[in-house]
Image 1 (cartoon, helix red, strand yellow):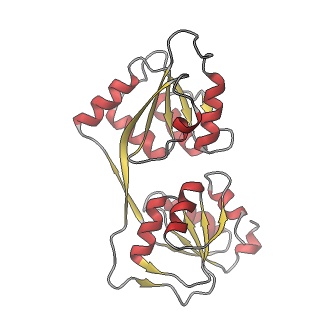
Image 2 (cartoon, rainbow, N blue to C red):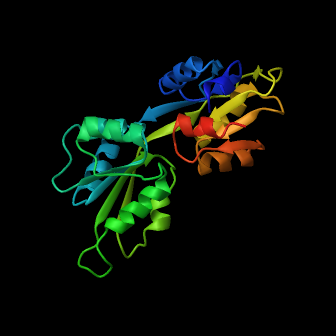
Image 3 (cartoon, one colour):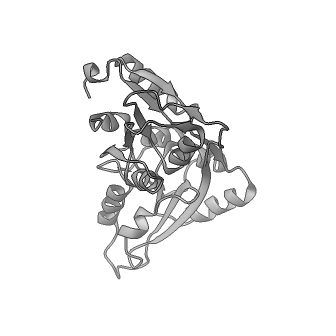
Length: 247
């Protein structure tokens, strides 16, 4: 979206305290009136059970997959060393790749379309043919209760997929009364996770003409189930992609 199209428009950023700062700065540079209303908090798992689960998943793995920067940082705290020899690194998105490279070294595969499904399809093409010896093991360090795109795309005959929850996102608790944003005309509301949908509805009251823009299918699904009307869904998990679909 061009700067002129954002000039003077109210944009509600719902990402957490740390994650939302860059978005807020970028939107203000484009002329938007930004309301930063963090709707989630992120909790990293730092217990011994989680550390053992990650270590077990990495043992003998051919790939480790990260779907978010938080997944990388949480895993790095549980496994503060180089990846075991032979483990290749796959990520969803540029920011996740940058974080993974900082903690674990060169990234071997980035999702071509910035989505979990496109990463799963790219990984599938790199796996050995079925019945070609032992199945490779793919470890996924991600959010508790996160999407299972790899399981839906990669047949069980082609790989053993092991999920390890290394963090969780928690919706903002209910406010009583909620913040009243209903007098703002056509605010653009950016939602970047299903948890943010719940957190937003816990903390604020929106006008009927709010323009809800989501970062992807799972967030759109959560928003629709909550009764929100989606104005746009990003093709990639980036701010720029979200801005491109603002009506």
